[in-house]
Image 1 (cartoon, rainbow, N blue to C red):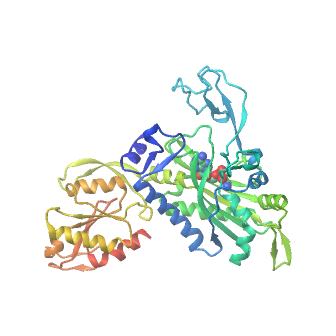
Image 2 (cartoon, protein in one colour):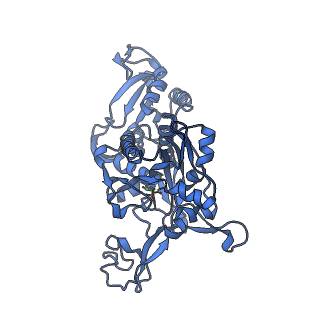
Image 3 (cartoon, rainbow, N blue to C red):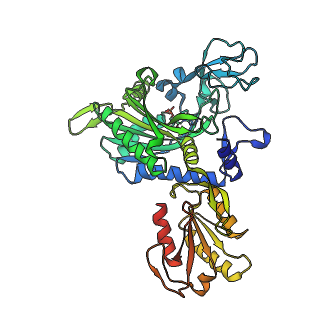
Amino acid sequence: MEKIVALCKRRGFIFQSSEIYGGLNGAWDYGPLGVELKRNLKDYWWKCMTQTRDDIVGFDGSILMNRAVWKASGHEATFSDPMVDCKTCKARFRADQLDSSVCGQKPSKSPATCGGELTEPRTFNLMFQTYVGPVQDESAITYLRPETAQAMFVQFKNVLEVSRKKLPFGIAQIGKAFRNEINPRNFTFRSREFEQMEVEFFVKPGTGHEWLDKWLEERLAWYEAIGIPRAKIHVLTVPDADRAFYSKGTYDLEYEFPFGIQELEGIAYRTDYDLSQHQKASGKPLEYFDEETKTKYIPHVVEPSAGVDRTVLAVLCEAYAEETVKDEESGKEEPRVVLRFAPRLAPVKAGIFPLLKNKAELVAKSREVQKTLQPLMKVAYDEAGSIGKRYRRIDEEGTPFGITIDFETLEGVKEASTSAVGANIAAGQKETVTLRHRDSMKQERIAIADLPAYLLAKIA
Ligand code: GAP
């Protein structure tokens, strides 16, 4: 994990928030590569939810909502963790995580074993409270949302009407959520500010368990599509005693992180709890008229709720590899660090390299290739250092393809070959480049004209 954290900083994936002021515990900034990775992940989720199926519509709710929402949802009264204080070192810990917490004074021990005197557990509400408007009194209180879900429940009627959908149908949203976690830890895994990707999927009463199982399969396939193999995801059927009070069935999808097997996503059958609560509290009907059965009822909900930051972290952990390889220039054995991202998630899709930076024709042709590809995908031009060093750099950044423009590009290839797309490249043919593959380090030639379609198919 330390190596991954160090790589994230070195290559600009993730930085500590407010680092120059000593940081802010539980908050993280995504650097130039991290933001691309995160965006690609969110875009792929969004595409899978709202584009390639027609029973889910998108939504973007506000972070600040009327306090009544949090009263009705139960968050104001019950969204809390048990907390204990250490009377000796004054630190606070989650009472249910004492064994895995670290004592601030004796880092080799846990607060359960360091000898410090602990208070009785008390509940600590995780919502960040704030005030709306200039007067800071009771009537102005609200909270930063601790989940994106509630806005989709309270706007259920509006969304249903405008989208003219029939049950079963879902609302999808990606957005920030905030929880004043007692002990943020494990890099971005448990943060105080994070993003969620949630679907509220509204179904007929009596079909909730069936949809819960359908969503489990759907989500497992999705993780495979982003490069996390099924074998690395553990499906936990959450026992009755551990489920949220509103849930009649929950699966937790857990990933084998270097720090242990931990939750990536929860898929919960939330029954009609949320809509019923909001109907009761607001006095506004949130029922659905079923034209088939000519009956009115409150829909039930199945909710796949995934954490963006946790998934980014899982993708980074899964992609990270250290290996010994033959350097492509010197032929010497060398260590390499490589991030084997699924190409669809890779922050940069291709590096573009003129073989030599002091040959104007090579540079001009490389810039031309860059201009052709730039409208289609994120590419990076790099002319600094030897080709071997440049390849090693893009390996560490997880860039799946390297494109080298060399003298054969300008003067014609010396030998005939079969190109990356299976076409014949004849001896003497110009306008071809070397295409280098990150994972196999295999190199082959491809016509510049074939590059856009070839790369687009690989990163889809
Ligand atoms: N609407 C349901 C809900 O919010 P949750 O299990 O509390 O359920 C869903 O959160 C997902 O959000 C988790 O599986 C996790 O991926 C992410 N998440 C929750 N708390 C988090 C935190 N403190 N830091 C990072 N991600 C978090």
